[in-house]
Length: 610
Ligand code: G6P
Image (cartoon, rainbow, N blue to C red; front, side, top):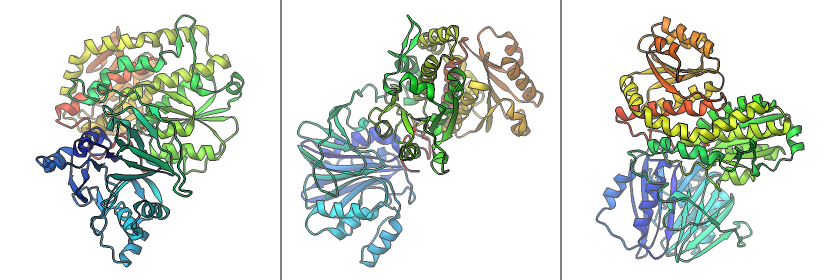
């Protein structure tokens, strides 16, 4: 949610900022802008819409600036127009800032600054930052910046430049991500590593409350209160240019769907042993006794990760026999939750930066609860704040609609349930063997499925591309898959879709059913006969039915209008493949409708505001 990038070094800042912004665009695409420092002037270029609009403006201009800041916006305060685009400046155009987050007390600050004669140009909360720095400025940019920080409240990652302090960028973070990239005679400040891949792999993850100053080949991280330098570990990121490029695919989403044959393997690699049917998870730091004593497990998350949380609850209860709950982070954090000593809390997040999930984690920590991250982005805020957990290792996910991260979350939560079950002796050996064998086979099965089924998925998608509504039904472990299928469709094609537990559909949604309201049903073996009855019920109301069924199921061919066959797997593993055709149907419907599947309207990949 908003991407920011800052650069000082010896190269043309314009090119580096634009390439960084392009890679960060998935975080927000309402507007984009850059500020370059040249001949002691701050040159600002910005426009509403995608980065390509910004590129049109700066095309032909070739400032030689070697430092600058940039921003790609997901609007919170103020409509996404040119004036509200970042960077924002002070009254004299001496200070420029970019900001990701929300300044909660901006109304009071704005009133105060207006009473002092400051003139605001935009409707954003962010603009108070540049004016506050101006207000405190007495010839020392750093001092003014630190004084500004004392006043603002809320969540932020901020970068600021002063035309009188050449080639210097000051940054600060609280609640929104900010990473220092250390290059050869150059330094970067960015929202996430995608902006610096190809330039440097050496990074420092800044923590909340830290300030950073970069100047060409120097950097300093400091505590804003004591003003003392902080020594931080330089870490190495492993993202490659190939991983953050489309690699020949028309969209990141399609690339990421196809990557699942590999990412599923990455999620269990080194964690299961097919020789002795064992599960190992190094990052949990729980003794067998700890696992024995657990009374309740919570899975807390948002969006697609919340769907993974439902699956996690079901498999955890089933395999480890521990009471499990799944929660929306945004609800959990405000409902005065009861936490007990023997509870443990997993926070599931692809980005590791979702504001509500992070806040829920901090709340549990404050209440002395035990917290674990299930994150994809290594070094992300949730991963570091939790201090322990399990990475999903799906690699960078750029398409806003999550796909490969979801199937990796399913694999990882299944492994955690098995791991707990192993110590609690609640998983029968034959079940354990079957799950591990089927998990191990899954990458090849996914690969074959994708090879064989693309044409049929395209033709089904074409057939249903003009629908206005759809219902997705599933039971048991396929209920979260139905939710996820519906979410994918509505996110990227803007078709109204709802996911429901198949039986619950009778308590409301069935009233909507008619011949123009197709129903996508997951009808693999789990609770098969019950699901078949539910299909009969919607068919009786005239619905067209698209079923996901197991290969060899003859009954379904007679009942459903369209069927996609998936291989039969152990029922905990089955949902992991079941979701893939639903991802592809959403993808192809949206593509046939001409939608920008990677950047759906109003959405952002990483929701760093609550
Ligand atoms: C946004 C994204 C979703 C994602 C959700 C939670 O809404 O568009 O794809 O599922 O945030 O994100 P997280 O990074 O915490 O999994």
